Image (cartoon, rainbow over all chains, first blue to last red):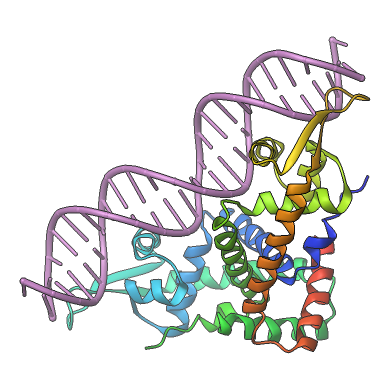
Length: 144
Length: 144
DNA sequence: CTGATTTCAGCTATACTGACATTT
DNA sequence: CAAATGTCAGTACAGCTGAAATCA
């Protein structure tokens, strides 16, 4: 059975990026779904844990998502007790979002899950190869 | 303005794969939309040009798409004159799809467009880096 | 008043599921 | 009859758009 991808597509690096990236995305999403979460939930928790309190439009800008979606996802995170909302006293238009203690412990678990998924996807590569790949991708990422 | 991605996410290679891949996918899709096409149209044309006639379920399997979607996309390609359908005389359940001359010339144009998008995305990398990246991704791709 | 921020309601495209007809 | 193939209708969800409400 010949089920290989078309050579003229696999010759395109961006095609490989697209398909491998889609697979990674899908497996992470499946993993998160087991805990009733989606990719944006983890991304927002990570941003809050890394950088501290954000207004919602800052979260949207940092993560490349739409502010309308940010509102929904933060809403769900708040309902689960993972984040807290408070009006910014200095500018009452803004809603400051902070991560709770429960949010941090949950994020740690999600990160461990993500590492497992990554281990699965990067399995064909040696440690040195993985390091090389990561640095190349990082340069592309910052170049976006 | 601090609009950088969260470090704990960019530390994940699969996160970088996901976001860079999504960007690549989006730019290719935008490019194809200018010609009234989508990613699946090009993928199917490429598969037909590379390997020859396919039954629709073979196309679906090779490209990782659903047979029901294959039917729709092939329908659109046939309406545009890019592919031709014929019943397989040896097994009249199957519909053999072949690429037409117009399909081949169109595919050549799409491939040129794709090369331009790739050049844009891989801009931060040297030729040697691109080669390294491509081989690493190819190993991940075949490992999926 | 203009602009920034948040929220809500809805639209669209894609991925997917299930039912059905045809043929082996 | 059971399995394979293709077609069609419809569902679910992510991504996106637009408008209203609040506040600087």
